[in-house]
Image 1 (tube, helix red, strand yellow):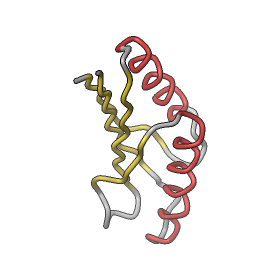
Image 2 (tube, one colour; image 1 turned 60 degrees about the vertical axis):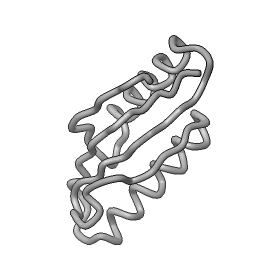
Image 3 (cartoon, rainbow, N blue to C red; image 1 turned 120 degrees about the vertical axis):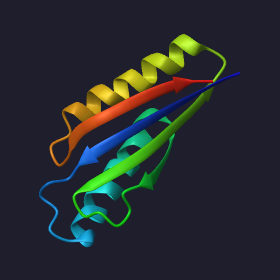
Amino acid sequence: MVVGVLRVRLGIFEAMTLKDKRRVTRSLRDKLRNRHNVSVAEVDDLDHRQAATFGVAMVSNDAVFVQSALDKIVDELRTWPHATLLEHDIELV
């Protein structure tokens, strides 16, 4: 069994309030869950209106598949129009 964990930090520079941030993060979280069949949670920067940190997890029996799927998510986040990818880290366990 392979567990892949992706930690991403996003800048949401257009958000003026936490409500603006929630709108962006909810949309992103739902799209990632539906497109990639992963678990997604906001894990840090909860009270910061222009930053969000997500944890993304995937379980499989194939490490190459998990690495590829998480790389695709990172590529998708790089082109996300409402947020800027600041940093990411992938770990396979």
